[in-house]
Amino acid sequence: MKKKLIQAIAEMQETEAVQLAQAMLDSNEDPQVVLDACREAMTIVGSRYEEGDYFLPHLIVAGDMLQEIGEMVKPKLAAERESEEPLGEIVIGTVAGDVHDIGKDIVAFMLEVNGFEVHDLGVDVSAEKFVEKIKEVQPDVLALSGFLTLAFDSMKETVQAITANGLRDNLKIMIGGAPMDESVTTYIGADNYGRDATAAVRMAKDWIGGN
Amino acid sequence: MSKSPEELYQERVKRILDTVALKEPDRVPIFGPYELFPYTYANVVFKDAMADYALARKACHKFLDDFEPDADFGPILAYPSKPMETLGIKWFKWAGNGLGDHVMYQYVEGEYMKDDEYDQFTYDPSHFMTTKWLPRSFKALEGLEGFPPTRLMMWFGWTGLLPALTNDELWQALENARKSGKELGEWFGSIGQYAGEIKAKGFPQAFAAFSWPPFDIIGDTLRGTRGIMGDIIRRPEKLLKALESTTQMTIEYGAGAAGADLPLCWIWMHKGSAGFMSDEQYAKFYWPPLREAIESLVDLVVIPVVYCEGDDTPRLKYFAEVPPGKVIFHFATMDMAKAKEVLGDVACISGNIPNRLMLTGTPDEVKDYCKMLIDTCGRGGGYIMDTSALLDEAKTENVRAMFDFTREYGVY
Image (cartoon, rainbow over all chains, first blue to last red; front, side, top):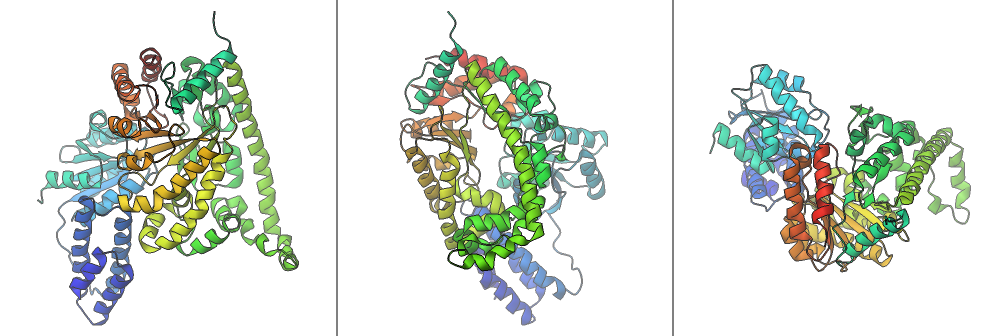
């Protein structure tokens, strides 16, 4: 059944996937097995996306399946079980003044699928909020998203606030969004930029390790 | 002898029409479709420009006088805050209303049509818009929810349905609509006044209509990105059926451009760019309805300005299918040499100066980029100078460099 579930999720058979997960839980299958199947399926979805076989529609449907099955499994989990140690911690958000979330959400999703623990602060996030969260979770990577040119200065201010708080040294900062490139990276004082979610995953892995 | 405004007007219109027709004009035309920049340049706070229409006109005049684009957008993108406040619009944030005082508006996506409402929408789009979309979009129009379906009023149907019009909430909503309608009238009066004023100075208006691709009408404002992308996999047949309706809407939105001196209908392209969907999905859901709408608009003697806001390099092969010499394709992210190669004999192309360059670059870098564009895309005509996206934050000297260099180097 586990194999079938992996296949159903990876092939976008939503109804079948949910039914299979339910059947597994009903037959007293270890809920962890269901979750493992989801994780394995998402790895397949992720790599198909990276290879250009899957696109936004697939990521969205896969994400919804994952959430739905996750909700079904939750009450069956006796206690909050320690899942696998994450590859690293990442704080992500769209910077102050910008309320665009689609690109940021895709990046957060792909990072999660690839084994990172992601703290998503949402959109229009002030420099102070980023600083606060960085102090709290001490992430390895900060991912700043912005769709508009007004985001440049918000990003710059965010990086300055991080430096002023003495948090810059052990932190890698990536930026992403339509207008970002190398010159913007320099302008802002970030470490690198990514064209898409695949690039974000690659950067995070390069920085933190994990193949 | 200097030319009269009338002569300059005709010259500018001809420059653009020749370029669209793939004939060599006297020089590369320059568009001025700017958002925030003219207001920043004129030291006008955007929030104020959205409330004070005379102030918005004044800012745009200053920009026009100092930069002289070949076609001008004017204050149309400074949406009027007063009627939007009256209506309690839910999917929009603007300067002073959810955003800072001097920033461009931003759209807040949501699901304004539920996944199980496709049939209702496709069957009677107007009734759906009246009773579902308007109440969900505008706080002040929530009372329209109970508006009866006029399609059922024939024969003696009206006897059962007209009593619904006695509902007080419905009348309150109509009263609110009347109030905002009057306020919008003032704004449109200002837009018309500006168009007249710049014509008298010798400048044509850069737009005669705005429209949206059939796919994005559903994706942007009805289902949202998440919704429509899932629908491609979950309910492809319903989506295709709804696209038949929205194809007609794309045409209707744009048809008003017919008869204008510059009959340009800007079609804002969003969710068909690279990364959003596969080639196969594009060929099934995005392109055929859009192509049909483009062809119909061309038949109506409208010039579609297909404004690609993402990376549309993989879509070039489809764009090459449009009627030759009748369409403008604007590109944000694009291999422009490839675009010229594929579309050179088919359509005029425009845009591509990176907006980030206008903000973080130097005048020399801007000039180099403009030179590359003119050298690559300008051969024999068919190219209009423009930035990648509507210009917000930018250094004045960079905008100056773009205009001055193009006027000098872009002469044929």
